[in-house]
Length: 330
Image (tube, rainbow, N blue to C red; front, side, top):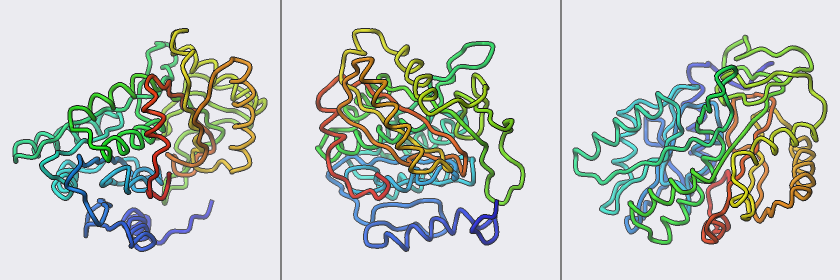
């Protein structure tokens, strides 16, 4: 597939320049870095930072804005930002209120962000972190949960962003984030592999008409491959697997759900899937009080979709989800 790019090696930098140009009234790129930050940092509240490898746009720069992130840090395609770059982001938004890092649970991401946290703390900045591990897919054969950080990370951005704006301190935000993550699960399905910028070969392979449940956002293998049947069948598989993650007492709570396109899934397909999710959840008597559909965390141009469930243990979580934000991708 032909891609609208110049030189592949310049793609990430040019994406960041484009974001800073289109949203110049609110956002800026720190020169020669992967950092996008709010132009005006509010020193009266805890700052929030997230990031990771590029290729998942609009994550994470699309969630920088009032009521969400203070800054994002982008690395190369599918490669996390370097520790030094994360430290620069922390220094750029830090105040006496501190900085909270929201980290997706991939080994290299966790390593680099935690190293940056330690360096910043040694320089006198208050820093804490929350690790998001919402992926409930299992490893084929071992049945061990992978617990990668995927699309549910965006709901964490929103809830913690609103809570930070409300005035919660660093410790309170860390605890809130951990509580939200513990109540959240995501599962995805791929219909076709994407290709990273400048690459001709697909990230992974599927036979014609074949799908893979539990696929990762970097093309990591799923837990089962089988022929495609219908949108309703996909929705039924994901919903059943997600509901098994919750005890009956929690499944009686109200839920927030997020339907996430993985890059090459059309709006029409997403809303057909949303209709199937609605009907199936009604049959299960699940009370959905918040819902979103769109491309929130993609995998370059992978064809597929993920579904996130968040059991709303506190009414305040719903209030935070509904609070306004000017982050352009929300």
